[in-house]
Image 1: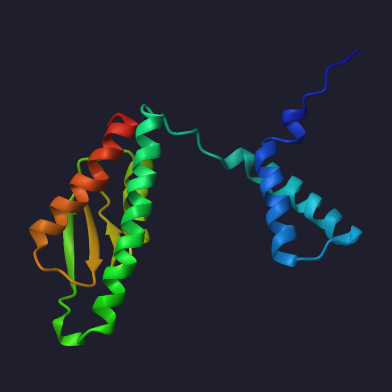
Image 2 (image 1 turned 180 degrees about the horizontal axis):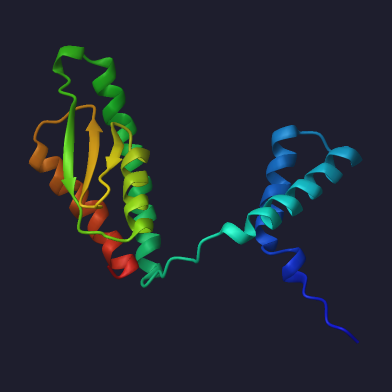
Length: 167
């Protein structure tokens, strides 16, 4: 009997399931046609992008990743409150600014995660990463001290990412 390689037809079953469920939640229609369409899309999308997927990043410390995500979630919640107070307060008290953050990270994925982490935290947005991957430019809604902001980002986000990915 010949063995059929299901991975060739279903490269990532978890992605299939997630896309299937998300489609149904977005459309909120559970007709046969919509279930069929969800299955086709959930099958074709991962199949079509499977060839361009990058290799997984070597996470050296997965437990550290869990604590990093918990830290990030807490920072997002606290930052939402702080930014709400700042926005509802007098606008002349705000000191927006651009800050250059020197990077110790060199690999693309950890740098991307750092930039995304900064953008997920209300009040800060990653603007640009230099081509040499030496500097990340960030815009902050309120900058009391550039040095304090750089130190905080490096200590709270970059250092754990360096540990997680073994950079």
